[in-house]
Image (tube, rainbow, N blue to C red; front, side):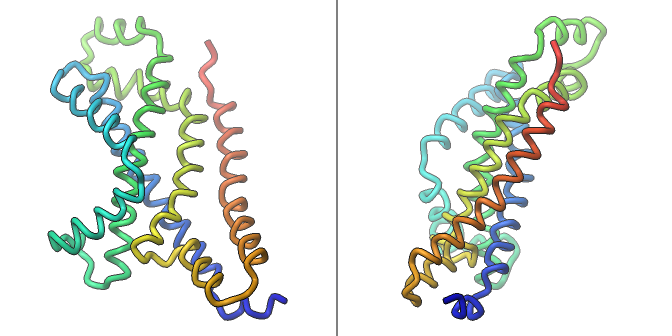
Length: 221
């Protein structure tokens, strides 16, 4: 019943999924933090850019963004992100698309954390001569991250599941292998159960661990 599984590299496909999720998570956290800083910043142009970016990107399907990265950036504009093999190019384009999309949700999760920081703390920091960037970096963001662990965990779990969209441009992750196996084997229920279990293994411990971390680091008010 399970003999056909040896013909497919299931662990390799899930390892690609993990790489997609981790690299996209790091990039999304960096870009999302910058967007959150723009949205609460004192410069109207930057606030407008951050607001427009979040509102536009959140309402574009991820599949459209991923396909644009492949068809628009690579095939039309010949942007290969420094790679020369098609597999590597598609992988990097998928990471870029996931970062562009997920960072909008990271931004909103962080902004909700920023809103939990008492205004008086920022005013006190400015009163002793700290600049806006120093107030944000030293006072506001550390507390915002602690308050936003829960929402950020949900974003990370959603990102892990969203990596399946990378199959649309041929990235050899779990969803693409599942599609190939379903087409080649008459074991639809078994194959679906295997890949569903694989994603549960990836996401459930993440939620439990980060949920525990969120409770430990939560700001007591």
